[in-house]
Image 1 (tube, helix red, strand yellow):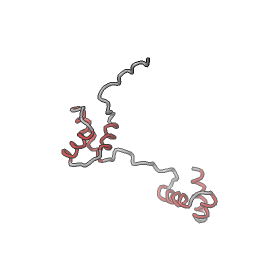
Image 2 (spheres, helix red, strand yellow):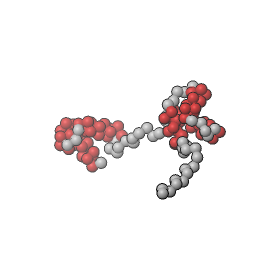
Image 3 (tube, one colour):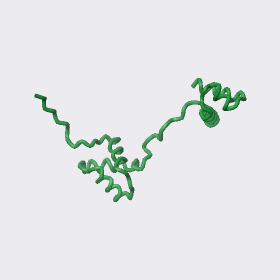
Image 4 (tube, helix red, strand yellow):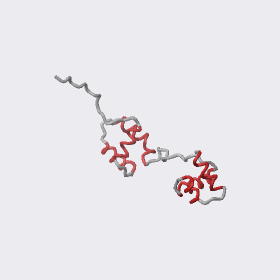
Length: 120
């Protein structure tokens, strides 16, 4: 934060972005980004990263998927992808379905782990 503040203050004193970049040993892009951030938000706090989650194609189908898996727990990923395509006219990749299942706390294991036999 201190570097961000010093860079923006240096530019606000009338120096160029290139001069600020050379003085503080940062890229010109960093200086540009900090000046824009200060202008847009009035602060120099880093913006949140990522999309926040829950905005994917399957977000609106989470409840349907949970109910479907409860009703028929032996469905495979491929079966679920086909059902989504048929019932919701939506093309999704099986990895997207897997991520949704994982976020719902459902795993691929169908039975509890067994105990290993002891080595002789």
